[in-house]
Image (cartoon, rainbow, N blue to C red; front, top):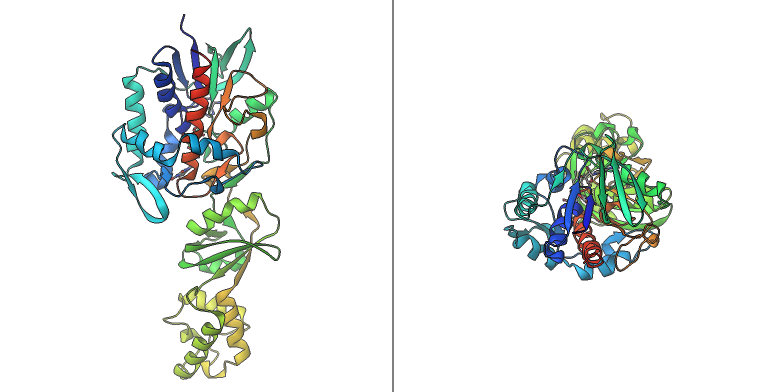
Length: 411
Ligand SMILES: Cc1cc2nc3c(=O)[nH]c(=O)nc-3n(C[C@H](O)[C@H](O)[C@H](O)COP(=O)(O)OP(=O)(O)OC[C@H]3O[C@@H](n4cnc5c(N)ncnc54)[C@H](O)[C@@H]3O)c2cc1C
């Protein structure tokens, strides 16, 4: 009798795992995908703003974080970025490399990735059971009994457990898988939203709401410099958003007392900014602060810089600007300080920082050391990547290794 592999979670890991499992077993095992939502792969459709940034040509283990900083290395070597590109090419998806090494389907449609996976799964006749929300797993006599919230039961010899993390719960993963693994004896690191907007004191950003500024964002923990990112920063009524913010948001889970400094004029030194401001004092000595920043900074930002430098009224005459005020302004333009109070929560996050402890898994097979025959892959584990296609690469790489090792133990 053929053995059964149950894949729990029909996301990025689950769908690729089904295809790999068929290939490795040459069709000699039963495979079933169990998915709680009414459709598989909902999150894939939302990735990369609907374009699916499915890998990054610069991906290395250094783009990934977790208690074990090196954990992803072996898996990325076993199923590399090129393997990902080849895998999807073989499913009919040509790729294109856009800014910063980000790889997208040539069609620039996330649905291309999901459709390619679903079409192949259909072609291999692998059954998908949707609206099967796994609530518990019991192991007896080397067999797993998987029970849904509607009390339906599936028996399996082995499990690939790929229920994702806690981010964007409307797309499926809500942490129920983490609870199940904890009930079976696994432990979890601290879970924090990542690749997400950041909250700051509202009074420092509210009047800038809706403004997009291309600048440099530097992140500090107290006085220690951590990392910086250049790009478009968007102000909201609660804080900051945009690619540099998403990229640096993973720091929130790892460091205390985060402070962001925005450099609004990154192509100039502070001294150069001071000289520009001084020059403008001469050029614009016929007007007031209402017009002083015109042509240099966004008007609302200019007003904030003026106010923060001690100028209470915009009717203040440019000719009265002192060197001290100008120095203050140059400093604020180069180092606009924002304390980071929090992230904007799991529902707005792209990924989860933290997860089930990787030390509880074999670091070459991803089999649980606690529940033999159960393999984990993807976001549920304590591995989180930078923004830019890295998290999906982790999903593809870990799915490949877990499935290969799992299936080899079944045939
Ligand atoms: C808006 C958004 C944009 C993103 N953009 C990108 C991007 O461009 N590039 C990139 O690399 N990464 C991106 N990511 C992150 C990436 O999508 C995830 O890291 C990746 O999908 C994780 O794969 P996974 O299979 O581990 O989990 P998921 O893809 O989340 O899949 C888990 C599946 O398990 C199902 N499930 C959960 N619990 C149960 C249960 N109890 N029973 C049965 N089924 C269950 C869920 O419904 C879901 O279908 C983005 C994420 C979001 C939210």
